[in-house]
Image 1 (tube, rainbow, N blue to C red):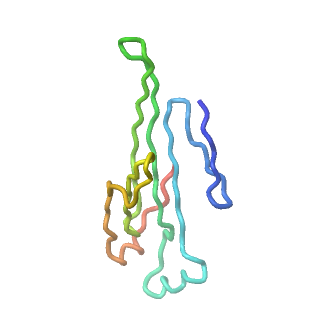
Image 2 (cartoon, rainbow, N blue to C red):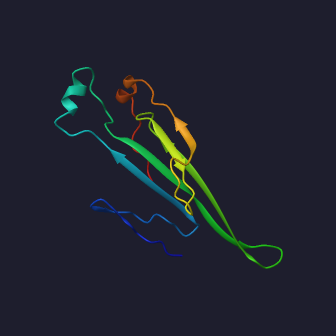
Amino acid sequence: MSCVRPQTGDRPFRNNLVANGGWGHVLSGHPNLLVEPGFAVFQVRVNTDIWVKLSGTVACGVDARGMPTTTISHGFTRTWFPSMKTWYITPATGARPGTLIYNRAQRSFEDLWALPAVAAP
């Protein structure tokens, strides 16, 4: 099984598809190092990155009639900051704004001092 590896900015997209069909990708970021001391004025932060982890599995099989089948599962984990909205846009029409399928409000700014460590893909 092969996957296309598109470029994301100046970093290559890492192909994490493993032999059992599992896959995962983590996007993360942190403030400019010159800004971090401003956070430390209130309290030192152990973890400074906010992140999103997408993961799942791809399974191939055959149905009772001998026709090929594919099952895709997915999962989504993230830090509570910032807010997150996910829209589904019909590929055929590209109509915007599309359908809102995920809407998670941002929690308190205090959560920036209690960020979990960046998840592994």
